[in-house]
Image (cartoon, rainbow, N blue to C red; front, side):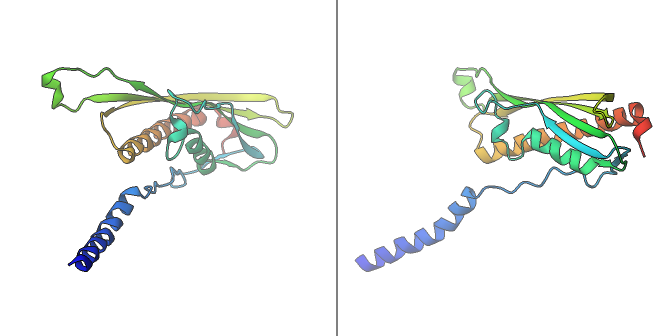
Length: 195
């Protein structure tokens, strides 16, 4: 009897363990990519990224915890969209802000709210980009700038996985807005360098 009990407990452990491992595995998020979009070809020799935003890595900032940070998504945007086809000069993409702040929300107390799942936090995201065209002497010849801001609230007792999915979507949507805005600005104000 004792042997059987040990055998069944090991069998149960073997059956339960794979299910637990699936919950513990980190989800794989797709790359926030813009290679499916038509590239913006510019008559410059190089495209560079200058990151002026240094995340504090402490709350209320949470962008460093994101599966794909807003700053990293900007790098993917630059690599997928801006193509240098000239010989001299450069495009400098300056990341001025790529932050997401976590704001705790006040929860309503009382019996009637006990069975209600309330919104407990709000995430306020900002991506601020400046695109400069510079000549071979590093003089700024033209500038466009765009800011994407978005907020999302989340319910209390949200799992880490569900929270990360919301963070990923927040970054993806902000970059989608920036992509449209910067394309329009470049087509309207940097025509001289378009090829």
